[in-house]
Amino acid sequence: MRRFEYRAFIFAHIALFIIFVWFGSLKLFGFSPANPMVASLLKETLPWVTFHTFNLFLGGYEMLIGLLFVLPRKEKFAIVLLVPHMIMTALPLFLLRGMTWQGFLIPTLEGQYIIKNVLIIALAAMVFAELGKKKV
Figure 1 (cartoon, rainbow, N blue to C red):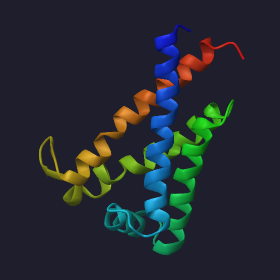
Figure 2: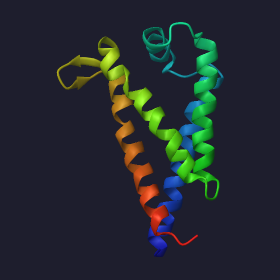
Figure 3: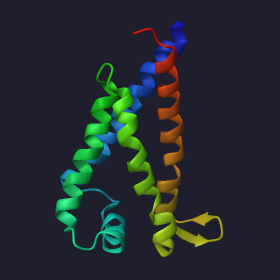
Figure 4: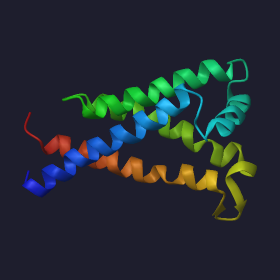
């Protein structure tokens, strides 16, 4: 891997770590601006689970994903955990349309927050592709 590619690879790991640990910790401490959407989605999908319990689990899950992206040889496990997380975070686009869409192809701020996850998926895919090239 050339120097620039290596730096980009490391930066990708650090960026994923920062986003997941930061957003996960906001959930753990009850400060996430996504809490109303999480609560609404929870009522639609798992109504028997309390919001507090689920939010603690979700925050810890996100922080674990972030941590695994910076631990050597744990990135593949992070990506395995990332897949169901990305599916779950996309659900409001389909189940909570009133919160995520203003009109046809016009997302609300919450909808934009979810749609930007395409970038996370692309970055994780790049990390995964580079792992296959890297000599371990």
